Length: 322
Ligand code: ADP
Ligand code: MG
Image (cartoon, rainbow, N blue to C red):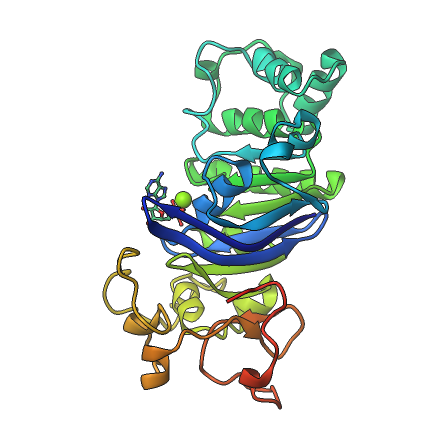
């Protein structure tokens, strides 16, 4: 449904994303994880055109997402976004009805009456909410309105940047359930970000791990959560409490994320890696190569267990140009 190939973005000459390639299938939920500043939001902003790309291609349903297609309203309606902050993202003097009506008007869709009533019911808001203003709504209700605004045009892809992290813990689960339900019913693809790995595990089919603007590991969510290969993924995941409440074995990362202005040589993670191998990690950037299971890709020099061949003799994952 959405395909990124070798996407590169920089801000004032400083690279924020490099060689980002992945594909999201119809109805699939794709989670992006990584520490703050790793480039997650920039990926979503590049897709929506809010961040300019230096290189690479983006396809939605096989059609290039470029300057031309960004002027094509019918095409653009296929990708919608939900932001973290439901307070800032709704106009304070617009009623719910007006918010939804404008989303339809921008896309030139008629039949506002039927659609507005339908989408409000779908996001769990009764008809009594229709003429309310944002200040008359709770955080969770506002986020339901933001989701309704995005889905009312029937997009194929929904981009979600930390959709629950500004909400009270007590309402986060309700919004997550709603998102999971809506996805089942509509077969819409999600690309979403959350710093809460419990959320990511709950919602994603696949996850991609970012560090300093590079993809370090991609794989089926259960595979990556139960047995991450990359030491960075391992460290990220070890910070999550386990379901049975036992303290997990924590892998602690040394130091701070290096500056993107002057990224480390070789593997960008080597300066903080608890399992650094030595010179090879310091001097050669590992390509993103397949792991032992389908769909698993890893950017790391540490040999993959259960893989009979030397990964360095494998072809790099086809759409990753190094
Ligand atoms: P994340 O969402 O993973 O926290 P971001 O995508 O927001 O990370 O940022 C990635 C990098 O790009 C950071 O180093 C950030 O400082 C930089 N960056 C993001 N947006 C801008 C911008 N508009 N101008 C300059 N630098 C930016
Ligand atoms: Mg962000």
